[in-house]
Image 1: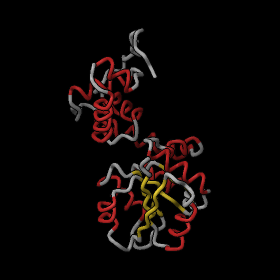
Image 2: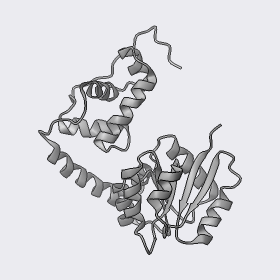
Image 3: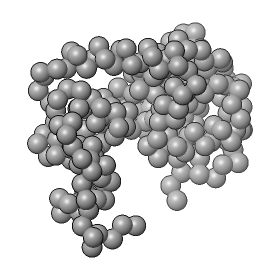
Length: 234
């Protein structure tokens, strides 16, 4: 089994060593260290970690801005921001960078390992933070409304096939169901979904659908599509 490659990026060597030791008993994780005083983006390009654990309190290089650059240049590297004490304002800024999670530096080893695995599998645990941060959720909603207004009347950046697949997603179909409907491989559907998320700068499938609906790129009249009875779901 391939290990999840994790790069710890923090200017405090003691903290980096502590994280490595904390996760050392996790057999599916490979831990790398990076001092942000070095050229972090070059090190990421050389090692291509699956997950970057990024300290937000970097003195020489703003951690949140660095997280934004990592997400922009290396979309396959999932960023988890580690903050001494993440407040509402910081959480809002972290969400804007497309980070997958934001944890306190006091998080337990089990919590950190679980979040790494979830991020690697494509989940966005950071979305759960909004359930306990109503002010952040309201701020996000207000920005989202302003953003979608600027998109009205703009042509969708998606191909015809991508728009078709996003419509099926809006109807509640899984990747396997869409592959069955379109008679193409499930991996091809996954590739299309990845392209859709990248083009729309969406965190996940639900976010992509919301953007497309608000922008009029897919119809709000979509209804769940009934999969044929002979379809064998795993």
